[in-house]
Length: 289
Ligand SMILES: [Zn+2]
Image (cartoon, rainbow, N blue to C red; front, top):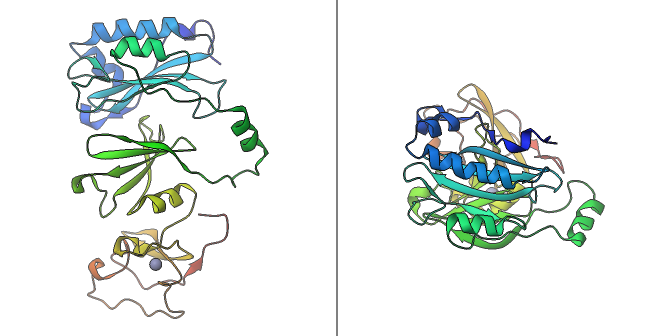
């Protein structure tokens, strides 16, 4: 819990962004021609924050920075009271002049954020008492994660927010795909830099949602299979164990022969490559990933 002294100071992430020559966000802002405007606005955030709220500054993806307000009294993701991007290239806050921008506010911060950006920010809701009660009474880990609300349009992708605060980005251009996969699953703040951490990818929204729920698509998903895995084959890829997941349709024969030498990953299922003789398949136990 932040004390009186802390709340007058923003917390600066010490994550480094390779796109900013491995600078921390503080180093990049100190070197920016927009430093003074940024620090003046940041001071208004910390002045407004109540004693339960903390203001933090972190990289989104250089040259963009996030300033966020969190309140530890609320459960995740409702602890996020406001978030707004700052573009180091033009010194603007979630501006339509920036190629990428991001902003939201919750109760208590909507007017402040609206004045800062010059338009009404998306206002995210609060957890209702009934939702809170349902979450508390459900056995841990059994509440399915679902897609909430409408997808937010961005340049090159559409963002689908999930009920656990994670999100799935659906590419709207082939160049934004991750490999063969149109949908990528992220946990906000899940990367050590403070940016969103990649948690998986899939060719369909439903399969990406299944990953969020701890399930695995069949390794043939890139080739059109839409079933969930019932087991996996451990394989060695560049000296590390990886897994090739399979559904009931694509399970290997009980005594699958080793892959003949000379075959490449292009004619093997999923992401398997440079495969050593196949170890025995393993079933996925209920409730595990
Ligand atoms: Zn399959």
